[in-house]
Image 1: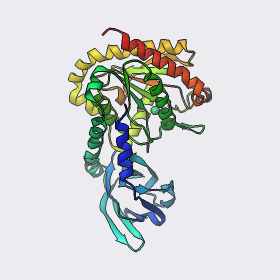
Image 2 (image 1 turned 90 degrees about the horizontal axis):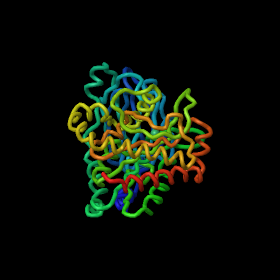
Image 3 (image 1 turned 120 degrees about the vertical axis):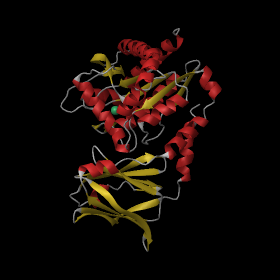
Image 4 (image 1 turned 30 degrees about the vertical axis):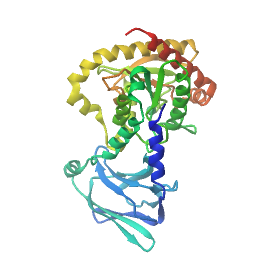
Length: 387
Ligand SMILES: [Zn+2]
């Protein structure tokens, strides 16, 4: 049923014959008004490189590169670079992100073969904030569109038409791990949770389940929505368990899209969620609104009340199941992932990884089971309700 997941697997196996990252032949060091990056690899691999603004970063994407779990921070001695990290970007691709201390633009980049394998040399040069902003931006990425297309090609449109399609969206993934507290990574936990919900929903008559990711990979928010759209989503459920700094927030809550005004805690959450996509250079929060605001608002007049109705039922069910609820379990927020206008979307904050009791509950399969039951019952009620 979730056949597009197999596409990820096929793509991943095609990338076999991986090149290795060699930290001993790698360095990142300061030059005069510049930063020099040298990366030793065992073989030449396809790559792309670009800068992103706000916050300023240099991004390197490599196809078929195995970083061997090595921390990239160890090769960095440059003051111009405040942090370096590796992470999975999409199947077969690894992303390296360098946080820039000041505006640095690409002066030179080239990969060459040498006696030890391959070497990527990149020179960054100091520039002004204005010039940096003008040069920043990710290149068009046809790979993602192809991936989405292939993923959806596996879905039978007839099945999608007649069945009630629930799209489950495990938050974060890959280079964006989400919250990490007490040995729990939000991205990993939400994937497990999504699989548990999927298993339960699939037992319902006439319900199909599609996951926006089936692996620990980065999926940009807009791709998550494209996948849902292509699958003919009747309902989109995003799954999170975030962490809040200096906050004793606890308990589960369900979000629907707000019309603008927001409370303070929620604003912080939006910020944290935005970061994941900033990492990949995508943030549709503003552009979506500006470009298609009016049209989307019209479509939302139909879908928004449905999302609200589902969210209300879900909170009732969670209460019935004895799920530990937040003091304000029904919330609204301007999360990018809720912006799709053509299908109702909700975001479940299953609890806060920053709270010890929530962490314990989320770790416990039986406790998660209460949430799974609540979601399944709410979906069944929503599916059966006349619209
Ligand atoms: Zn999250």
